[in-house]
Image (cartoon, rainbow, N blue to C red):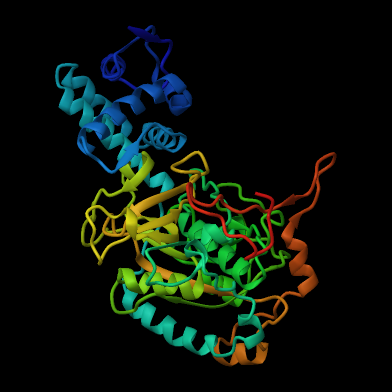
Length: 455
């Protein structure tokens, strides 16, 4: 039996120390005082012990024959840490202590309760209550804005090729924007619940690359969190109005700090959106066909999803939990849909597919930060939205834009925008240029479609 020395995560009564460490098969060497609880989540052995109990519970609930694998990962440990520091932790600890080792079910429920509390720290998408009404209004505006995009700008869209991996056709069984090297790598929101900002920019960065010859950018998540008024580190929704009316800085102009900072008054945006809209204004989750068509026409889409403990513990395979939440709480997290693969649907169903999605929990989560998820699982596709980025060489006429959206600011100078492509070199180090996410494993990378990024 292992031993934890001074587990600094418990409060009175003292019995709680024994009970919660017993649940992981561990015995405390010492008893801590309430004052030590503040550093609770920093004890890696304690976090590992509680995470182990949680994983055992998740493996048991998923059962044999599952289509996906779950495992310990830094994000799951982050969730456990947040749960241990939550206001509910003391009550849960006391309940566990009162239950004793013999009541395994109660112990498991207590650990799950802590983790569910911690889950809030990595989520944060809250859909508008009047989503369909807002979608209808936004799509009316976007239909007008799409009409004023210069034809020369549309010519910068990627060419169609005969290779299945590179051909944008909703009738094909699979397509993934990563195969065209037009999707940036997965980033990490930390414990700031601003997935809504990362999902927004995941779609926008791909749209910028699609409309600007394959050039990848890293737009500033902090700029969106601090200045867009679309949300904070607790809750938010798509920030495309900010990208369309104001624009966004490069990440090196305003680096992500993982919390809400004041909005710098002198921060100049480098990149702009020209239009955005919802895939559907008739239903909160568009059909598979509608999402495929929007992916082909506009590029990757931001989407809400119902994040759960199993979702957080995802490691590989096709995620298919089918946890649909409650009528008033159907989604809580934002991701970016980048492609699909009908061949991964089991059993075959023409109304379903498997979406490839980009998350915002870093590259150590899932498959380099990405996930395959069944289209019928966890409300994926909820509130799906597209965005069109300004082509720097052929921006729309500002007067025409203002005739539709009167508060639109002037577009950034082309030279200033292009300076945002590459992070300036730090002393004694090379400059940094954004790199694409790797194409999906076992799929052919297209040649000659776009400039080679050195992969």
